[in-house]
Image (cartoon, rainbow over all chains, first blue to last red; front, top):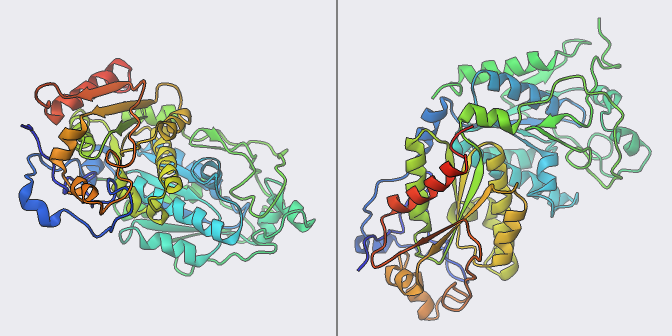
Length: 238
Length: 237
């Protein structure tokens, strides 16, 4: 009667799917159709996989996780990195904390547990982008080591590239691009990272961006440091 | 020698990310604050915008939202569509309910409010992919009209392409690719769409995929979607 049958093993994006999407209602997630595989015949080939998308884009997907104090230059670096990669014909996308807090993460507050959830979700979305072949740049303070490491753990080895904007607090505060340090010092913001909430620097970030003595490199120079890393690791080709 | 206590450049709160101005409210506005504005000067040109990514990819980003009963063929059509678009050199990505419920949405249950949240988050991610220039295919039952319409409302006009898998329940149940209808009929699953939870069919989907006497192959269904995308200009920059 039916000209097609689908197996529970149809792959989306090359990954196996289990029974939970359509397992709505209260059920065991362990229920799978694997035991029923012999009853259904997969009649069509697997869909496009990550390797195919990478071939199309001539790059490898990854997550560049830029972390650092407010005012350390994360968004600026993200922008210059995007420009430099785009000029090389590479597809990138920036997940900026702001964008996400106005959309996906609009239900989250700044309580500790919501901050962790903010980072978790950004990590999961970055993983999806990386899987799609995009060079995904996450630009978010992400002050707690545990939360950043949790994001690292969900990605394949090497695909989480942590970039630490290692700028001294006094430099960030002197910049104060959004006037937030001033508000924090005046007690009008509570729990502001660097003032009355900790920033836990990465212990083993892939890339560290620092000042050279008293001088800050330009964003373009900083971006080139990241691009050299990506190039050396093979992310700028299929 | 430059003195970094007086920075050599200032960043305005209008630095554009992905082509969108970001406000100074939230990412770095941790803690509870007033939403103020900055008086700093933009010194550098804006970043890569959506139109630049579309030029690079030679396509326009959009969301193809495939909705329908379990077993109606959503994932199958999503796969066929991806293959066909990839063969045309187009960049796509599938947001399958399963993938997302194992990752981003693993904290969600199947209670009504969590189902709505599941759809909301998928819609927001699809929006990001579309903004990135990707043709994003969401394949998820999404049984409630209100939740699907909310996803539609967050996208620019035209960029939400609703594809309704209009396949009768009896056909879906006969397929029962994951054995779930059987479990639902036996009362082992509660609130299963089509059995004891409603499916609200779209009222104005852009595309309706139906079967006649015979169910068309997925490739034919995919071509119907591709013709739509072509006609609306999504397959070029």
